[in-house]
Image (cartoon, rainbow, N blue to C red; front, side):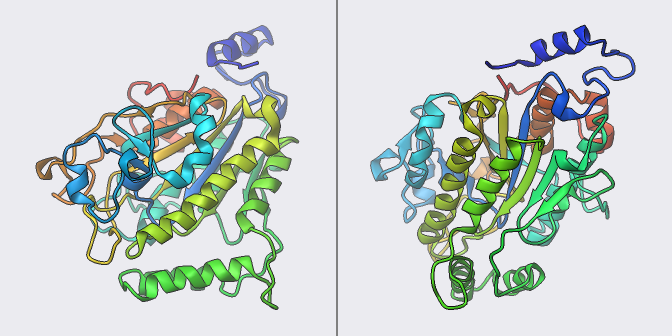
Length: 388
């Protein structure tokens, strides 16, 4: 059974929830709250190319901008609505799309602009601030702080390295797969920073990290790290956990994008399917998965078969709680005059407000708290209708 926000509010009131003191949550652990929703936030590190994932093949300027990347149904992509098509590697997710459990929001971005640094972009994304303010905690941790009765087992940070999204005073649990990587997260980020603009070394580094993640010290397959993350996360979501976050790397496609996107999108598709299967239909119906990236990429492909750091991007939504089967958001167009600085997809919505409405609908945290505490300085604006 799907439980909408209106039903949640009604049932909360029946349990004696005071609208003045705690308008949308009873003072118990979230696991025992009437709306037993789950939230999974996946950070797609590296800057996912929104125009390759959800391809606006119906835009008259799209084909000329990307003659080598060749999007649209004529080149194997899956038509979504007569204007957008889905990258063919994500075709295993089409059952979710047809069931209304997969959707996208195009032309969104954090307030971060112009410098196009992975470090800074990810910091702004995970801090949830209007810019580089030095904020030390993450917006997902601050969200937990707005929920009465939050306990450590309620929230899970999964994977290797620190997830700034969940860093802060509110309690959460961390878990890492047993796979041993050949580089520390800090060394990996430094290597990406040094090599990101090199058309030879950047894809070579990505290949080496993929290999190290997929083989043990003797060179034998040791299982897929992203699969382990998804399976473990699903197991926890079947128990006490209500919020989980982790990362999927490999989205920095400066060169050889066809190969790079195939690898990254395969991991993403497998992760989402594993989460759906792992939690089961009853919990999946009450789950929202948000896939977020620090920025988009240039509208034009470059000379090495890739795309460079951009601005506007896309958010991916999955789960039975989301209003899928639709590409949400306004489309800015790809004519040169419509592009941001004549190079990037123009962002028409604050990513934080889109996420904010999902959080509001799932958890009941009020608009004032979202704008003041969770995403300081954010204006929630009108409801974009991302939840059922």
